[in-house]
Amino acid sequence: MPHPTSSPTHPSKSAGGSLARGLHHIHQLKVLHRDIKSENIFLDAAGNAKIGDLGVAKVMSSQVDFAKTLVGTPYYLSPELCENKPYNHKSDIWQGPARPLLHHLSAQPEP
Image (cartoon, rainbow, N blue to C red; front, side):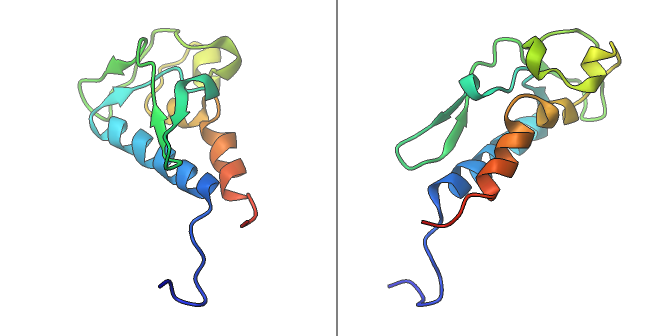
């Protein structure tokens, strides 16, 4: 039985946490997704986020390496990509729903 003052995890917070862990995991493997958007994030039956469509992903030679190729969905591009500057894993956080979705999910009220 759960502690009386604790509450079960809200499904949206579970999704936000699993999205953050998923991005952290692929970045630890030196992979840039480069097209994070809501259409590429899926929820399983337990409410965990799954990152899909790695079609334009890039494996970096090191975690301090920078990519230079302009790829991804134009609406979700980070400022570095728009300015044709080198970019790294931080662009995945900027892109698409990663930044606003994590904020939105963490701000959802408990049921």
